[in-house]
Length: 307
Image (tube, rainbow, N blue to C red):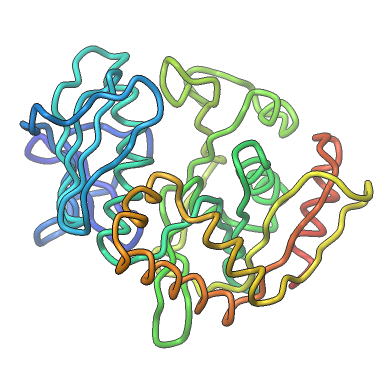
């Protein structure tokens, strides 16, 4: 930490924060940060949601509010302002928003395609797991890392950048958000020091595998898998055609971005084109498997076998 700030590196960005985040910090680097997380004043008219937030705005400025954390303003992917947090409980929720909704919005403002999933670095390239809430994305990613066959790139937020050589996944924070049952299946103790709660109102815990670190450079995207429960006990992997793959990518766009994307024809078209291009360049498959955690090892083998 320097000059009252904590420094982090994620998604190809140098991040300076007034808030200590529950992730590994880095040494301050030369030059101005790409993204600042600061406390400050936000417009009083931003509504405070009791439950799910509804971000409003555009690529220049987005606002949202939560009765549990205060008001947030995200400006141009360069600054996140937090207004109103006080007390350890509120600060815990603020940190969760900074690593989640606010970070996802900032990445979208920077022009990245942001999906709701988990990403792994494997010898073939980045593999991304997508799916609805409770589909097991984080659990499967953590099991693959524990098996020694992959490195965690990011969890919850997957930021994809189009580069000269094709789509790449930007390494985020190498920390999983796991349910206690998933931790137990991985033989990891639910401990407040090693696996703290995401925040005091949450059930899930943060888990960083021992020695966890992500690649510093973007990783070429190799495969995308949509996770679903059901089918044969041994699991199955079904390749999706372009049209179906495109539909699924649109559905799996990071959920907090949907009100922003739907706000104008331009943003809807941009997101559609980004998902369509991706579905033509990268294999997208549907991975069906048993819901019991005892089959995790078999599912890891299926997921990492190939496109």
